[in-house]
Every structure is written in C-alpha cells, then in structure tokens.
Image (cartoon, rainbow, N blue to C red; front, side, top):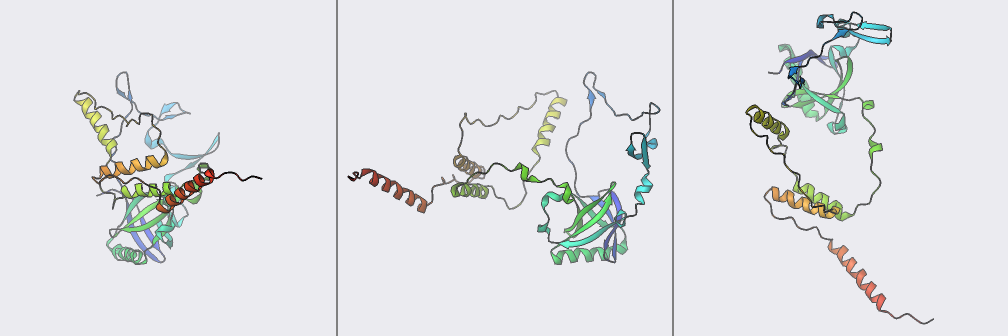
Length: 295
C-alpha cells in the first residue's frame, strides 16, 4: 500500500471529506550514486555554515528568505503549516468543467485520494458518483510544498485522483517555435493519414521501458565480467534522400510489415487529378503541333 504523503480534506461547498493523499505513480528507473573514479569511494554532499566554517547537522538547518545580502528572514516549518489560507489544510473545489476543456500540457503528476476516516466514506462516495454522472472534473486549489497549486479531481476505478496543474503563466508561448510557412499537397496529407492508420492501436498495451532493460543488461554483464552487449546500429539509408511522399509510403509499408499485414499500396494520384493532368498534357501537345498564323 502506498505511503500517505499528506492528510487534509476535500472541501465541496459545505461538504467536507477527510482524506489522505498517496502518490499514484512509481519510478522503476535504475538510479546511480556518485563515486570517485580513482578509488570508487562514495561522494557525499556535506553542508557547511559559512559563518562558523563548520559542518552542520539536519537538526540545525532551517529555511530563510534572503531580503538583502546581509538580511535574511527566517521562516519555520510551523509558520508554513499555519499559513492563513483555506487551502493550507484542504483541497478547495472551485469549479466543475469538462475534461476536454483543459489543455493536457497543464496537467502534471497524479495522486490518489483515500478517505481517512469511516465517517468520510459516504461524502467520498457522493463526490465519486456526482463526478461520474456529470461527466465533468473538479478544479481545485490546494497548498503544498511552499506554494498554492491548482489541481483537477477526476475518478478512476471509483477512486478520486488529484492531478497537479500548472498555472496559466507557467506555460510558455509556443508561437516563437513555429516553422516557416510551407505548402502541403492533399496527397501528402493523405499519406500521413495512411501512416497513422497503419500505426493505430486500441490502447497502450504492449509498451515497455527498453532503456531500463538495456541498462540492466550492461550492469549484469559487468557484474559477471562478461562482454558488454553490442549497441544496435541505426539503419543505413545509403545517403539516399527521400522526398516526403516516398518516406510516407515506405513508413506505411514498414508499419504494416511489423504487424504482419500485407504490403502497403503505393499512394497514387487520385483519378480525377490524374485525368486532369492527362488532359492538360494532351492539350499542350496539340497546341505545340499547330502552325503559327500569318499576321
């Protein structure tokens, strides 16, 4: 069972739901420590007091706001816990909105909210049912880790999930990253859609962290004093530069082959466009065969 990282309540109008918060995700990445290469001695960070020129313990360390270079305002953990904010001890629901109205770039890490007392079971279930029937999510404010945050509450398998959200001013304007204006043909767009169709899945089943697997292979090989696994060589194109349509057609063929399907059909010009093109060529030949009129 995940460890509780915060306890408080969900405030829904005059309804209060005591809850405990647990992280909804796990990190399975392989982590490293820093070592001295010469003798593999472990490197550790030590905290020194500049005034007394000595190492200090964790019990001697506190927070402070640097007003000037010579003046620091001390702030204790107790003062932070007693901030005059309704969101300091509760997740305050402010509004209900459709989930699709929230830009996914604003949504961050997720947490499970669990009723912390038997008396919280009924109002907790009430909020779960209300969110489900309304097909909406709740937008809430709460204060964690030294700042007030915005979050969204939704339901997953009858459990309320809180997703942290970024404030609007935390999202950078992407317009400066736009490429130069270009023209696309309908054939190129159709080719991209064909590639999307060949790569479409019903769900996310089957995705796997191959980076961690490869890293584990290296660690195991070095532990057993075996040769390291060979690195995969990127596919060579022989210096050939594909045009966009050729690249799309070849990508569709590879995607279908990887799924055991037949070869992809070559993307051809639509019949109407081909007919017009043929007519234009014929007209051009006929015109070029005429004798010029005398003045």
